[in-house]
Image 1: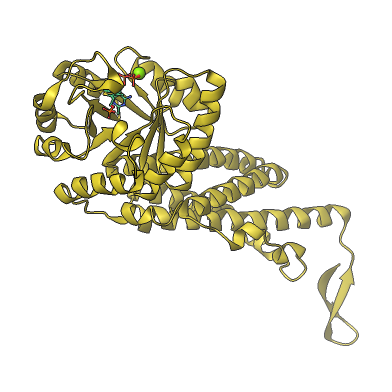
Image 2 (image 1 turned 30 degrees about the vertical axis):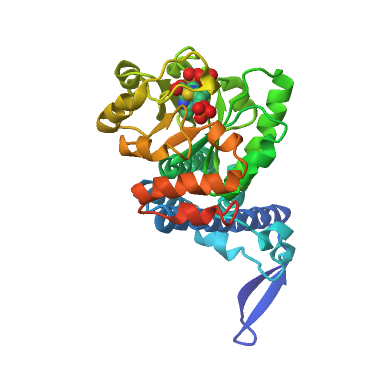
Length: 381
Ligand SMILES: Cc1ncc(COP(=O)(O)OP(=O)(O)O)c(N)n1
Ligand SMILES: Cc1nc(C(=O)O)sc1CCOP(=O)(O)O
Ligand SMILES: [Mg+2]
């Protein structure tokens, strides 16, 4: 029912007449309320994401993108939509999802809010068409901008974590795979590569899925050795490709701009080419001959020193590195190392991980130590 103010000629006073809404008016009112509620929802969700981009990441570009979309949403939030609001009569204000009360990490908070914004924009797109055809079109475009923002933000976080990762565990086959990797994660590891050259794909896929979940629970990056298809199938953070593996350009087409691609290098030419081809990091080795990569001659500490002086992207010294020689590798200029046996065959993987990290962090103190803390609080960001 709507109220209409009328002038009563007999009493010289105002009377309030109540007359029923027409069906069309009722329909419009419902649409206005839906649009009003979802404009609020989308703007609130964007604001939550924007605060992280601004204060958490200090990233002006991502912050500006959130703000731009909030402002565009505000321009659709007209007075007629606002005046249709009926908070007291809205049963939805009482409803909360149990997960809203128990977010455990910034990552899950961001994911939940991206979801909320995308849902709200989908609603605005559909109901908006009934209000103003341009609104439907504008909201469709904005929803795609949100998908891009999500992918950029998650990719940015991933690359930031790569930069902060100084120790890289490359796994070897063992019955205790998950146990050992988890022990290393507990020691502060933030970068893991799943490598098993001799296993059926069905098992490889299963192991990769379990490892990915484990790594993400500990806020660690999870990379697949050799196989772009497995990386995509398990939604890994990236792949590591050797000189005989898929070209970086082809892998990039499959993986998109935000996943990590690593490349093995043994000499200056391979290093330069990997950088030019768009690798996100390189492996540098073998520093020492190693049974894990039998038959591959050592590139030696000279190559490590060369890379230290000439490489513009993150790089990991690899091959035969253990607690006894890590300081020689560091002295040659390495800030990051990758190991297989050093952790996979250690009696106490947590302790040895902590030792490796302590040496790497001692030489190269990280200005941003938040990543160290994040490993004591699994899945923190
Ligand atoms: C970090 C890192 N560096 C080098 C390698 C070796 O890759 P590749 O040469 O392709 O040899 P395989 O590992 O596939 O035997 C690596 N895996 N990780
Ligand atoms: C997988 C791998 N790639 C290397 C390279 O130089 O490209 S060396 C290597 C094995 C490293 O194993 P460990 O730490 O047990 O010596
Ligand atoms: Mg390979």
